[in-house]
Image (tube, rainbow, N blue to C red; front, top):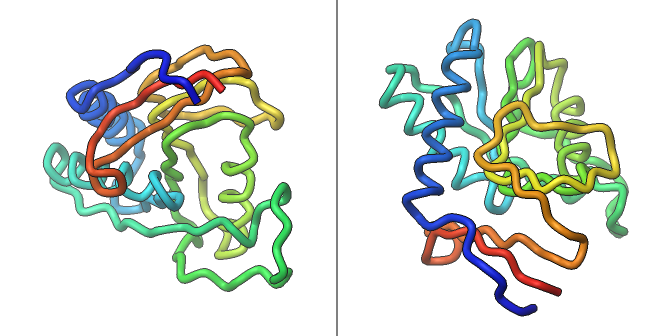
Length: 174
């Protein structure tokens, strides 16, 4: 992959996450009914940032859960065909799924399947740092940090301090 350009530095990422946090606060009918679900790997640190922002700005402690969607994917082959029971109290909750990049929609579809496996949520919303288009499924994000139209020859790489030691969003050419 060849580096093309930096889309966001740490300050821009923090600003986008703060904006997403405010939108979640504004759109929630009752923050006591909201749970944040960070999709592993980079969705979890983003969800932690959103959770901290909500607590700081609204005084509400929103529960946070990690979600590994490996067994719910339809585009990856796996030896284990049994979908695991999840320790996710989704029943009658307003679930906000958090991920780094929305691209084809397959990760989001798998995450929705996982939430359905855990219970019947009142609502499921999606928060992403980057929406780059090129959907294969009819899925859209409710909360978006930045929309970035890309070509199919480009890849967006999100780096977060918790996972990568630095925070940035870059485009690479494949």
